[in-house]
Image (cartoon, rainbow, N blue to C red; front, top):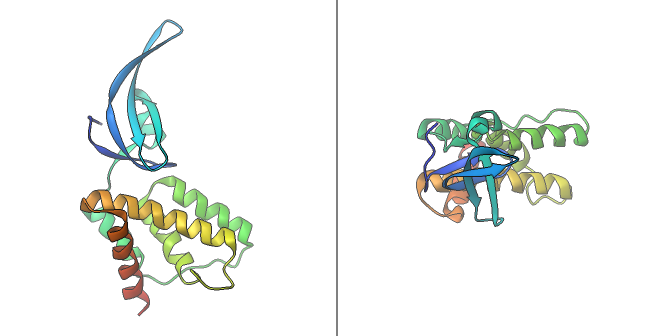
Length: 163
């Protein structure tokens, strides 16, 4: 994987970041090459060892085709399992943290029906917003747009599926 400064990348548990470059860190007599990724939204810098980039899930932005598949997922019917909320919440969190746009789109789709409804729990709304935010950030980076426009695009796909 040839990451270079300026590339937008996705780290599964943090979303879209920007590669600042590759540095060599020295610790305990060893030299370690790390990819330096910054996440502007939460003012965080992550250093991922070059050798661990793939296993950590660090990846380039999704291809246009892969993102289209995720957006098409939004048009499908919500699949809500009849299990306890705590179990579903864990599954949703795992999908969001997988970094897979299609899995994240499934969470957005499944929780969207209740967005803003009085019967929606606080944690349900939080997970929905986290998934929507994560998906919108990647859509915005791919479209070279802002997150507001990307969120609007996602909501349009959701409406076109349920309408």
